[in-house]
Image 1 (cartoon, protein in one colour):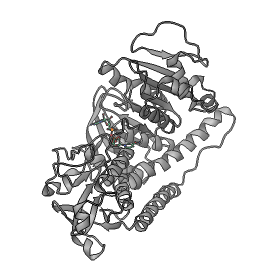
Image 2 (image 1 turned 90 degrees about the horizontal axis):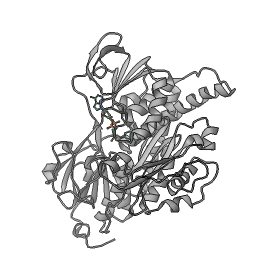
Image 3 (image 1 turned 90 degrees about the vertical axis):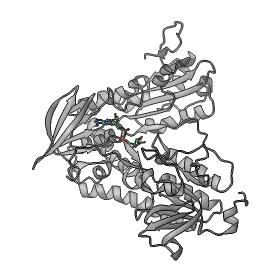
Length: 494
Ligand code: NAD
């Protein structure tokens, strides 16, 4: 660490670094900065550390998705001779399981902050100038009450759910992702507005718990950012289980009635239907406009984003921003990496955010995961690419779990022979995609993947087999011999 940071040496500020926001990006930045010897304060408006992801997002949703998967897997075994009967659901206990998990992690974070001597200040932060922040409602030390000064700051204030206008937001039956996770009841009829990651994950949970689900999506496919073939196995499975999936449709109005919410649909599907609850998951909007960043001279776009360079510096060089507030993709794992970069740059290290790829995962059932260039992007950009695709119908492991609907697809740049993208649909796709991310970061060619011995029988084998499909060395499938055209796809059959 460099000792040349003028402010740290002069000690004229309360803190070397103040981090605003304690989500995965914020607490990582604070902890890394403290580990590098800086005096750090971490300001958070809520009593617990962890932000949306830990308290009301990624983590609690995974507990409920796990419960849903157990219910579904148990039911699926009926066909194969094992019957557990109809599940009896104690919603209070299930909620406790989720809350205790969150509690354990937030307590753990608080403990780690203490050990690192990161001062946690609870309150709402607003910049008062280029080196000052005021904190409302803080209960920290005297230095942290009211106004605090900092040598450097890291803005990690995240994002919040987009509220569709014209909907009855005061009605508790209209939910965003946070209230949906509270699991107040299991509605008989649930409408999910937005067929993106949050909408589909929550639909998965509520369907397993017994709700009848209707999904309405504006675009022509679910999860519009992902390749259409990747989403197809999920769409096929949920189409059988859900009441309806309306694509190219929107909800123009929701009226309040005593015993239901009345939704008006327009587009490819039109009509008026009653629901017990409605979940709105149409994206998130950054919180950059909420902290008076402009008072410190920090540029904030009209949409609330804060532009940064590759070292996560804003236009004010001693103020950094990370996570959802700097732009898409709004993913926790992107934020944590950016948090480390910002902290290290604060400490004088020559770090920069230079990840080639950031994986995306929908923890639906089946999971959908992708990383790097999608096939859609490869086509759009006229890349000279080739695809190796391994259908899980030829995977003994997937068949053994009676879940062979998925596939693994690797995308290669023909000019370099290197892997540039991957997509996986199926059980645990979110775990499997990391190998593909590593392969892209390492600049692997198909042979590097196919000649790496993968254990048998695993789902992970499907990655080396997809590389073998591209290589033309696959023996677990039969591929008729013919010359492959540029951009064409090799898919085997069992
Ligand atoms: P999203 O952007 O993933 O999906 C929103 C969907 O709503 C889109 O498909 C969009 O076309 C649709 N939509 C928009 N307006 C609509 C309308 N009026 N009617 C019907 N459909 C409409 O957003 P999200 O699912 O709300 O998630 C928000 C953010 O949080 C995303 O950036 C996501 O990556 C992130 N997130 C990630 C995870 C994960 O990694 N597993 C989980 C949850 C959230």
